[in-house]
Image 1 (cartoon, rainbow, N blue to C red):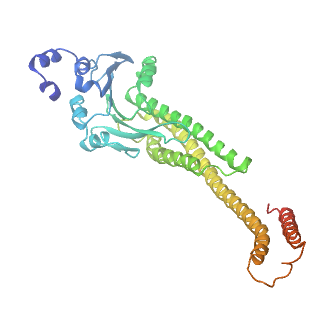
Image 2: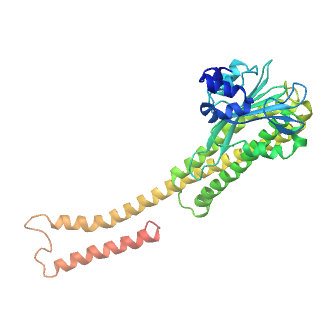
Length: 347
């Protein structure tokens, strides 16, 4: 292995005496990206390197490896160079590629970060060989340690081979989609209640944050439908044909999730339009109120403006009760205008 040869000679000799799994765990430079590696013979966990070509399989799990690290750890596996480049690059579109050496599957992991926050989206790449599974994960949205532990407690399941591992991972992934969709739906219901029940405009930034959650979810999950369809058809290389019914069931679950996301998207579109209408109505009401008060203030302003002109000959300037008459007139007109606007719901 090239990363072993690059070490100090004494440490290299010590590492060569260890099984591959133990050697990898002793390397500080690799420990951060190699999560777990083991062989499974008749469903029972063994140290890496104990499985034969005719019995058992290997499962190697890695997190955020570089191209060099991935090739070093999997130096004995023939990995297609294009698949390796995709595996070490983030933000890949879900897909399934078939090569002579292996089948390569890319999926997106999604976790809910909280109301109004962007979804936590990562990448999970799976190399499926005849006697091995290599998982390369980017991000913390769906750690695989729990999945491995649960499978190890069910040797009869692991005994079915690498395809059983791939099925379990994708099944848990779609279950995660269901959970995230339920939480996004709760956000949508909160927005819906705020708009339609209270008839008070919601905060636009809150609505657009939820809308962004839906868009991000659909962009990450929808492309997985095509790979699942191919797996359900049972025509993918290195995939056990007996699992096609299981993958078909997962595809049905994914389709229900996508249908729910589409429904949430339509609700949000309606809520956005209703919210814009409420904002427009509220602005019109504000303009009517402003116009009404301006109309009320215009009459006394006009009268005061006329009598504020410095002409010598103006009526009532010399009248004893002129001041009181004019003030009373302004007050009466203002009250009448106020009542008229009030009756017409302008105030």
